[in-house]
Image (cartoon, rainbow, N blue to C red):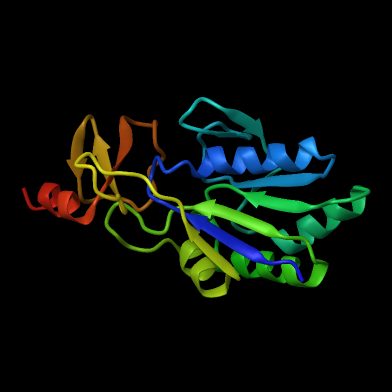
Length: 194
């Protein structure tokens, strides 16, 4: 039986780079993949973009109203052999879409590997991430380090170079002077309480 995987980590932990590497590994062996990303991730439009300046076109840019199980089943019918579904920025999926990916993996027997953040800049969970933590057969943390050298787990938001701790849950990195910095819990609270 195929599984639903959730590989999460703080910003700059290599999630997108890892996804591109997995896609390359499958394709190098003559195996087909489908790459998916939510439309809310406007960075790169129809491409996924790694911080290492590696890019890859996606096959499906999903709207929040899209039924991913139905779309992927249709895509599978168009291909001779499909081996894996790869999803970038999975935190932006709806809980229903995560359930649809779980259903697809189990019933169609094709693995689905989702990459994304676990929490936002206020340490609140994203809808898609919460459902992935509940349903994924396998959960793996991709690690990165804080400015102090400890393991980072928070995604601190900066606007014009200054840490901010209020605003909408979604603000895309690189747009409107928004950037994110991975921080350990100690540094996160040091900046938040200063």
